[in-house]
Structures are given as C-alpha cells and as structure tokens.
Image 1 (cartoon, protein in one colour):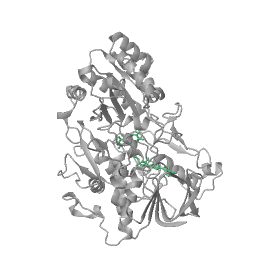
Image 2 (cartoon, rainbow, N blue to C red):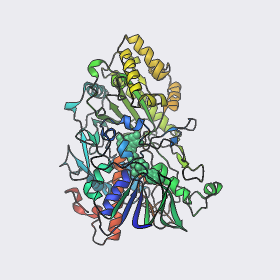
Image 3 (cartoon, protein in one colour):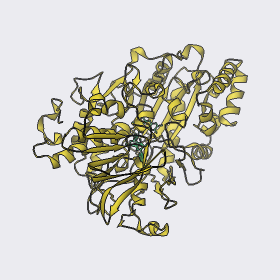
Length: 582
Ligand SMILES: Cc1cc2nc3c(=O)[nH]c(=O)nc-3n(C[C@H](O)[C@H](O)[C@H](O)COP(=O)(O)OP(=O)(O)OC[C@H]3O[C@@H](n4cnc5c(N)ncnc54)[C@H](O)[C@@H]3O)c2cc1C
C-alpha cells in the first residue's frame, strides 16, 4: 500500500494539469489514476492525434460506452460520449479552444464564486496557452503548455468563404480573435492544435520530463471504484485493474477529476450527496449535500448540413475541417447578447459521403435549463442516470428556434446552393454515428451514397429526405413555429459540455458542493477539480475553461502549502508579462 500527498482520480483535461503542477514540487508524492489507456509521448494513437476528430469519438475505444443521457424529459437515453483515455475529453474532443466571455466569469464571482471573476481567471487563461497567432497580445500567453492556433481567412476553403459571405450579408462583422474580442461576429475559430495535430492535456502536460519525475506515479487502465472514507475524512481510494485485482492508494488528499458526470457519482457512492436519495439506495449518508449531481448544464444544440457542390469540397487529405465560427445574439425577450453560437465544418464525416456535406453546429449559450446526475444503484460499476433536461426553460427553445431561422437566412445568402432542400437538419443520431465508425464496410457504403448524391438533383434530395430528415423539410418548419419547436424538441442534444454538478460557491449557499478551491464542504482531504465545479456554463466550449480552473486551483493548493509560492492572480504585473510560477 502506497502513501501519497495527492491521489488524482481521472487523467482528463483537469487531471493531467494537476498532476503536472503538483508534482513540480519534488517533496510532494502524487498519483494520477486513469481508467483508460495511457498516451505517452511517441505512442499517441494516430486517431487521437488526427486534426479531424469525429472518428475518435464515433468509436467505443476511447469513451465510456455505457454512459448515456436523456436530452429532454421525453427523450430516450442515448450514449453521451465522454473520454476514457489519458487526456479525457481533451483527447477526443473537437479541439475548439474557446475561453468564453468576461461576463461569464464575472457572473461566477458575483454569484458566490469569489476570486473567479474575469480579472482573476485571465492570468490562468494566459498561463495555460501558447497562442501561436497572437503571442504578443496583452490578453494572450506565449509560453504555456497548450498551443492554440487558427486557420486564418486567407487559407479558408470556399465553404468557409461562402459561410462568411452569408454572415456579412446578414450584418455579422468579422473578428480576428474570438478569445480577445468579445462582441458578436464571425472569426477564425481557435484550436488546441499544432502542426495539424491535436494537443490534449496528456500531450501538453504529461511530457517526457514530467513523466521522469520520481514523485509522480501515473497509472492507466485502472478504474477507481470508491473513495475510502473514515467518517468525513477521505483517506484514499480503491481502484480496480483490468485483471480484477484491487489496489488501494492512501492519500492525504483525494482530488476527483473524473468529469462532470462521474465526479458527482463518486461523491454519492462515498455517502456525500442528498441524504434521502442515498438512504433510499442503501448508501449511508456521511455528508448531506443536496447540490451533488444537480445544476447539470450543457449547451442545447442542433446540427444541419448543406450539400457541397464539387468546387466547395476539400480533399480528404486536408484534415482540419472545422475552422470558423460565430457568436450571435437572438435578440428575443429573455435572451442575452451573444446567446447563440454557430460553428461550421467543411466535412460532416470522414468518408466520401461526409466530404460532400458542409456541417453547421448551432447552440444556445447561457442556457437556463438545468439537469441532473443521479445514482440508480449502490453498485459503483453502474453508470449514473443523466438527465440533461435541455429546453426545460422555454427561453432556451425560443432562442434555438431563433437561431435556426437566423442560420437559414445566413445559408440562403451564402451562395452555397440555389435550392433550399440542399440545406437540411441532420441530427447526430445513432444511425449517423454508426455510419461514422471507421471501417471498410462504411467506406464502401458511404462512397456509394456519396456518388449517388452527385447524381441528378431530384435523386439527391430524395436520398437526403429518406436518410437524414425522414421527409421533413426545413422550409416547412420555418413556416410553422409549432412544427419548428416540435422538431427542436425531437432533435436537440448536448455538445458534450457537461458541467456544474459539484458547483463551487459561497459557504452560505446550501446548494454549493465545494468551496472556491474545490474542497468538498464538510469533508476533509477531498476535493473536486474538473468541469463539475462550474457554477454556470461559460459562453464557450468547456475544455479550455476546465484547464484554466485546474491551473488556478493547482496554484491555490501550492500557494497554501508552500510559503513564498507566487499566487499569479495577486501579482500586479501579470497583464504585461507571462509569469512562470512553477
Ligand atoms: C466528443 C466531445 C467533443 C468535445 N468538443 C470540445 C471542443 O471542441 N472544445 C472544448 O473546449 N470542449 C469540448 N468538449 C468538452 C471538453 O472536452 C470537456 O468539457 C473537458 O474535457 C472536461 O474535462 P474534465 O477534466 O472535467 O473531464 P474529462 O476530461 O472527461 O476527464 C475525466 C477523466 O476521468 C476518467 N475517469 C472517470 N471516472 C474514473 C474512475 N472511476 N477511475 C479512473 N478514471 C476515471 C475518465 O476516463 C477521463 O479521462 C468535448 C467533449 C467531448 C466528449
């Protein structure tokens, strides 16, 4: 049995950051335990490195295949992809590197997460990044572990230029840098990517020199089964190896970095959560914390495709397909500035069919609906029940409906095509996902379907309506608000930005699960550091905000332990120079 200062559960976006930062202090013994495979330098699988991300999360190898979620109250559970590999979400995600808006973080601070306002978090956004395009801008960092880059308009393929034309004609202005200009506009999207290769947190933070540290013990393919509690004190964890062997790790502090669905589940299995519900499952409640598992948020989203004429397609060898996005405002009552986000990709899937389709992702920022993670069994191996509860608040569906109308106008003005039936809703359904699995059978089938799409236009539209839309036409939906809302309810899903289920907050807030450094209320030696902590979803994808949070909390942990450790946020000169603190 080994003893550690910190046992980190989950080597995902947050876990890798903490492992690197905490183990930089040689006197601290740190263990990182990841359920999935390791991706050490030189042995990162090519499908993870690929700039084109869809194949990696359409297969089962790097996800938790039994983790499902209901999108709305009425929908059936569907696989909700979450990374199960070193790097977690950052190893399988779309690589978008979006900070969100200053007001997102100012609202965190104003609502009880003191110390998390924009001025407080900016140093950590700078610390984590190496912005390849804007290294010398005041808001950017140039020495951090995560390279961030964009594909600038000069290198955009014709599909992006057409999308930009549609946006301009609808009064949307161009911006250069989504992470430093905070109004509405369209822009070259930022990515955590270098030389057309993904950079996960495993790649960025667990580099060769970090892995050589004798005080850092990295364990992969080991699933933490439970937290060992002695009363309210966490003493360590028990983990299960693939061969069925159980291993115990003793620790001064257990840090849960298992993601927004599994961290709250682990707390509940340890007896920390809503007392009545835990008791009903036969779990003794150690700390009655009703907020555990509540406040689940994701961005409600819809996907659309446009048939691409041959001159609008990219060669399959050009891997990065997603390169521009836009922030827009719905302008509806109950909406807010920049409450819609639109991203695009010049290829909808890896194959010959997907290469003939341009993809649009529409989501609603600042959703008001809240979902929940609940245990269904006392068995720690049973996945939790996940209800995203999207669109529960009518303001969310109203804004998405407005977004669909806006997108249709943008596409109509883009010059992508003449016939509105070539632009159609294309949910990321189980059928579409099955077709997106990489394999010889799918390659053959999709190359056949692709060739048919290039046939006569009536045949193409018939195929589109058969395969993707089940006869539904966008023009009909746009003509009938009730039909449009029914369609949205039936097709909405999240964009894998699960967050908020162990939210941090003020000690006086009964729904807060942790303090503002992630320490679980009422417990000792137990902390959560991952997307679960977010009080409210930022107007952004969640990877970079999660990394920022892990950087900030790592700094706070070290500042408390080591007298003289510089707390970057308290230094006046952070705006003018990148500061290395460890
Ligand atoms: C398909 C997909 C696309 C996305 N696209 C983007 C994007 O383009 N840009 C963006 O910013 N965000 C994106 N996101 C979201 C972003 O990646 C996540 O918000 C972020 O990775 C969350 O980080 P985390 O540390 O909270 O959890 P994770 O990164 O999920 O890490 C949790 C880790 O814990 C491990 N784990 C869980 N339970 C156990 C256990 N019992 N024992 C041991 N290990 C365990 C998991 O295997 C995992 O590695 C996407 C996510 C997905 C899934």
